[in-house]
Image (cartoon, rainbow, N blue to C red; front, side, top):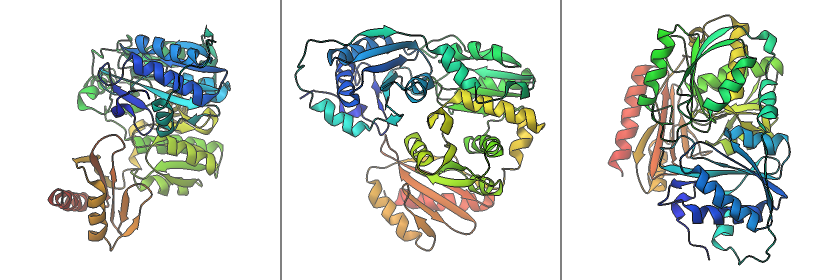
Length: 445
């Protein structure tokens, strides 16, 4: 039986601190387990710029090839280049070595199988903990291949370039993989790009890789205003999450950005499904319905967004965490496709970004509140009883809806936390109901 730190197994991927939790030995065994599960001729392997990426990739590839499976090494890439290789080009499986927006000491693996089916980590864990002795000396071959030209053409295919207007755009790559992609993408676009932190650097010297942290937002908000830019974008390390900043320097909430993208897709294909998750604002399903689309409500997590799209004729979907997925991207997410769609919509709309999102400011909503708690099931049951007069559902945690406000409480998939979201028709009602709910949780911990 293989010895491995159980902390690295998350709901959707493998992730941990290098080398204390995730090291070369673990990478080798993960490579073996993935090869056995994928049963593919080749597995595509890409990585981001994290400092431990090269060492982990070497051992991951060794594990894959020791099982007799070949490797297509596509080098330093954004995560959706791996999705492109598997979902669009049809390769048998893929793995991206990344810890997304986590701090620099982390690294990890995001894995997909043929047809863009995300690896169920719990199943891979069982395979990993029970690896047999190697049964053959036959090794798989390693081929290096540059897929960037095909990937860029695929991303550009989502817009009509002749419809794009010249905009001034601040792009903060955060020393992540967007620093490689945007210089290749920008020459195809009629934009004046103001680059911030384009140097690939796994130390993240400019600011943390998580765009939602206040210290990550200072530089881009200042640059947008000082340069009189039309808008800005800030992208996390592996580029699967992208946040927009309007011309006034204000961050655009991700569920509002989802609506902007949804409007463009519903213009193209009326009546299609748009997926959103349980913590998005009520304005999201209201607007999707108003525009003739079908709102599809999902659990939190890009795996669930993708599955909901496949099962219900969805054309795109998005989350409050700023993952945006697209049917024609093999139901996978892509920050760069989201950026191009926004460019096209703003080009055709004629209004500034702040004006476009202004019509979505109908309700008052909290940021996600995280409360440390171990026995989440017990506290959720107590909340369920206290708010039994509201309309309840348990699609993801507990959602309770009243006439003028609603809330969702759910356990974190990765930490001993209860995540709380509240939205109300007025700011006063929001403040009072949030305080009551949080106080109740704290009193019952």
